[in-house]
Length: 104
Image (tube, rainbow, N blue to C red; front, side):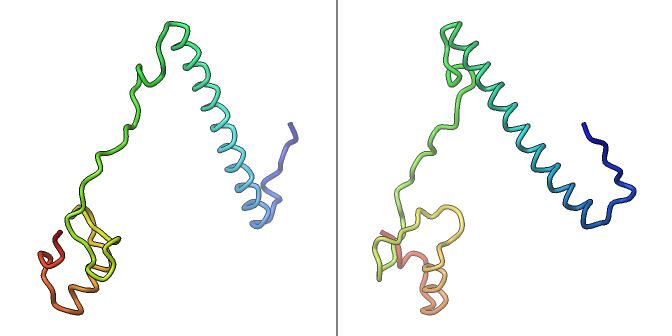
């Protein structure tokens, strides 16, 4: 491995080296992660299991029926969870409307 004398490098060169190192570290971590995943999968299959049986997985979240719709564009809906959509906020500000006016 080549030796690098960082004491004689400029700031620009040091920053470039740092960026290369970060990229190399990320690449090696991803490669190691893939190897471990492959090994775990093989071990699980050897014993008659799948990875999902042993560790579970992120299932799909439950979809919630929409509760509110945009009267101008019925394809724009909101289930009442999370942040209010921009179309709803704009209509409530502009018209001074209440949330229940947009209920389905």
